[in-house]
Length: 267
Image (cartoon, rainbow, N blue to C red; front, side, top):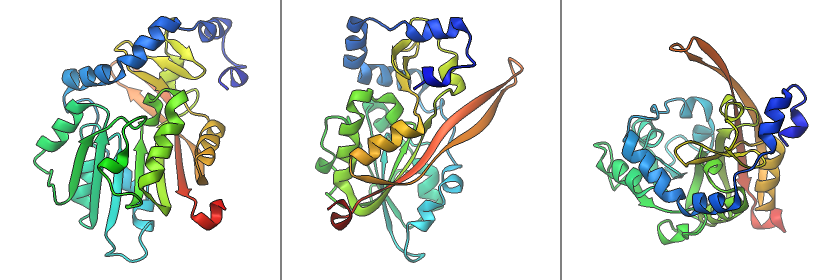
């Protein structure tokens, strides 16, 4: 947990760590989660996130998942946003078909309006991973690889398992989940002010969107309880330079790879 690793934090930070947002406000944030993400995309349109050209560099697995070079790969991008990862991938890899879903209807509309979007190579749809059955849009057991990039952190911790069970249904036995998200003690976590804390390692931003910060242990347990096997699970340390404020801030991400157990393994 955060507090068990906070020996170096000041008493002021520890006090901030203890004060939780009221139960009433927490229920409202859960109820308004989709609306808040939709407003985020209304304000920022397609300008907020940079295209993620690092994906194929960081996740060589997209190449390694193939038995032979020309093999067609079926991918699900769970939480595609406006396509910052999706479109570079489609341009980079011609032997790929992508199912892409997002919580926000507005984000899905941006994906469909992108000039690179082609229904023969990509199928985009709106979906709440915690309650909408993915098999309504994706054939059961049809997906080779699922990318879960900065998505699970926006889900309430109590519902993360539901999202993984949903993803598991469309993934082939032996299929792969490639995960990258916010790690424990990332700069974004440490700069939250009092009144932002929803639960252990779980915070609300000023715009009402929420973020969870993962420890390796929490993530491994979550996937293993849902029938996945851990292949890699490591913190990635980066530094982001904020030139305007003259700051160099430490970023902590968690990058992991899990495979869906086959019948014989889980038995």
